[in-house]
Length: 205
Image (tube, rainbow, N blue to C red; front, side, top):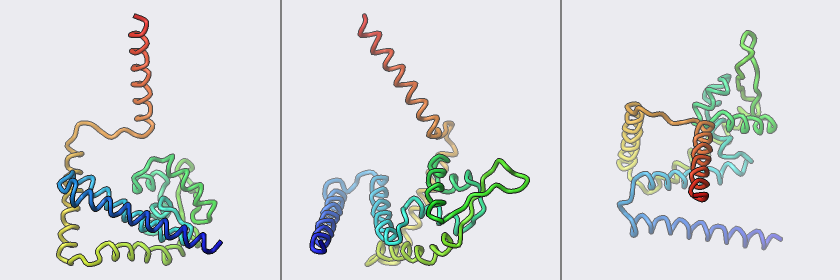
């Protein structure tokens, strides 16, 4: 059994190395000047995978890490505020909090005088996770910038902040807005229904 586990681990590591090499070849040889958004996505994906690998040792998912990190900075915020800070829709937050409550990481309460809003608090167990998990995130950052010059790291950070600022300004100047998940689902359903009616009309002609 032990040999089988070791063999499985070796196969998994080999597959990960092979996948990484394919990504690097893509950027260095195939399309070195491809869109920057794709490169940022691949880098972010690698960072998140490295973090998840470490979080798993404590049975914490990447999704739960996102909410815990926010609550370590400030707990007692509403469920809606938590959703906004995490950048996810409220149904996603509700589902995650349900699981986190079962694990004993958080509790939700309604406060006197405000029975509509739900406030989220960490439990002692949830607070203790900070000392265990934050070093993992710090380690991932150290691994990511290994053998990279300090000046290059500073330039990369400055460039990424400028990209965020440019895109935020673009969104602020836009006349449209990003629809919620519910609105998007409704729009897609309506378009699907319209397409179906159009195909039906052409079929009966």
